[in-house]
Length: 232
Image (cartoon, rainbow, N blue to C red; front, side, top):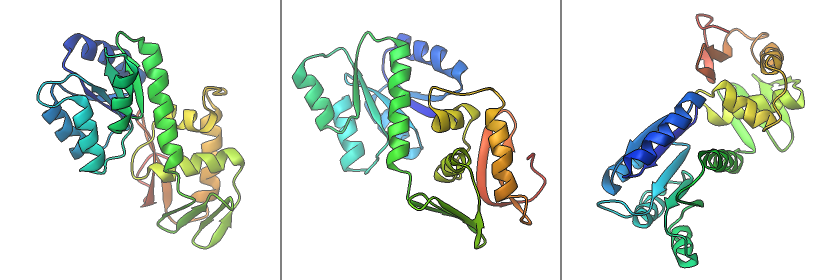
């Protein structure tokens, strides 16, 4: 489940964003001024921060610069502002923002930009080598091992496992996992379930404890070892 922090003092904009994104499975937090926004941004994990430039207490460019320089926070930041001059945009990017959207904006475009930022951020943070418990994945060599045993995964299965391992211990929603694997070209509704079954046959079935678990209605998670009291 993707989590978005909205730092915006216009209640109508905040309400519209909530109404559009919550039914799509996004989890949202919001702050109405700069100081409270900075506190939330540095105290919790978010996939994207939507940041208004004109904020009470601390403007958006100062907040973004503090996130980057003082807290070394790399969460993607999408600035929302009515200021549309080149110098305004340059100031936003110089403060550390990743993207810039001019008000008024289309919620469909906002969603597209958020998804692009999440994908880019995930790609940048996919390690070549991932290790969780006795499971290891090497992206460069396309090798997966558990307890020293070489596992045979399809390219799709490899991508599913890589996505889960990179996100661990976070729970990955079905929609997020499908998008990571297939982008906008998601096949039939049963495709993910079928591929996950094949991945489990390799990663879990030959071993004493399962690592891939299903949280019904929430998503999927990979942990060092999970006893068989969780739905598979």
